[in-house]
Image (cartoon, rainbow, N blue to C red; front, side, top):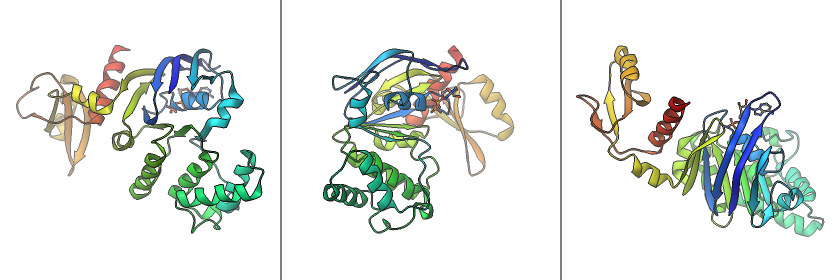
Length: 292
Ligand code: ADP
């Protein structure tokens, strides 16, 4: 269990990236969902001991994460948002290099670790290829391999699916799900489906604040009978947006389909629908923006 309490951070330019963030993150996949600029990376970097918080505390299995950084690093696997690779080096060689840095001094043992990780992330056949020739999805799988060196008990992946095509994304998420059973895995993302597909627990954050935390299914349940859908004409869209609590607008076959949050039928023509996590997400973001 990772316990985050009242964590705050203001950057020197005055941006308050984290506002008294409090979260309990148990074993398994945990989705940290929020729009760009919400503070996800700031939180991830703080948990990964790469930057300092101003105040608050973080406890992981009795380790004080903000103070005992060395100890955290030994338990941590981290895939940063901007994970860069050396394009001219092979996957095998770079992974071996990371294993040396992680403290695998024994050559034979190191080989075993590297080989098993390359197989695990399905890059065995491509292990001798230069990383510069890898696709985005392959690079992310390589990123996960390096994060898993040394069997970390806390795994942090920051926006890993951005830029992946649907097939690569699926493959990547399945891989994460496999890891996620025994350890704490925090997946930060702005893509709602990443969380829907994968995470039994989640938090939504925006502007440095936690807007909701818990189980996606329960959050969806709480919106039951309050989400309405209508296909509207393009030139009436603005009216709907000003009169109703519009959660989302999507074009389907070129026509706008809106989702509206309301306790009763907003007007004729609206049909009640089963809410999904995207409705939950937009409802929270809207309520928060309004309150601000
Ligand atoms: P996210 O990962 O959710 O997109 P970030 O944690 O990257 O959010 O950013 C949160 C806020 O803090 C944003 O307003 C961003 O511009 C700002 N920010 C992030 N890093 C820095 C920094 N090093 N210096 C100043 N402001 C920063």
